[in-house]
Image (cartoon, rainbow, N blue to C red; front, side, top):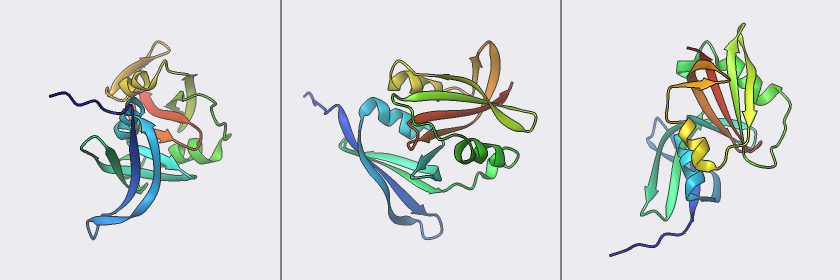
Length: 163
């Protein structure tokens, strides 16, 4: 038996109440390609309407709808880098990429510096970046710290430190 699936899927970002262990409400709802859904699910956090959210879980319901459960960004494991991450996201220039873009930010001198920026060949090309903890960027080995999908800027932000 063969299942023919649509190339798009309904994606819901849902705020999760970690105390009551239940949904609090819908943060965002949009239709995305299945390839782009991988980028959405594999990132650690997301920016939606100028607010940073951490991913806590995700699921797909019979491949017809997907949900990503989020909480307001706390960044417990990011204590040394939290202010730098938030500075890149909220204090810099807000350039909205016409086409989906990837930015690598490298931790140096107590702040993040833009190391590289480019347009991936497709969503799966971008998603493949999210699979490894270590990468080579501009001939430098880096260790991934945090990945953030900035839906406001249409950009995947990759925060790393020298390996």
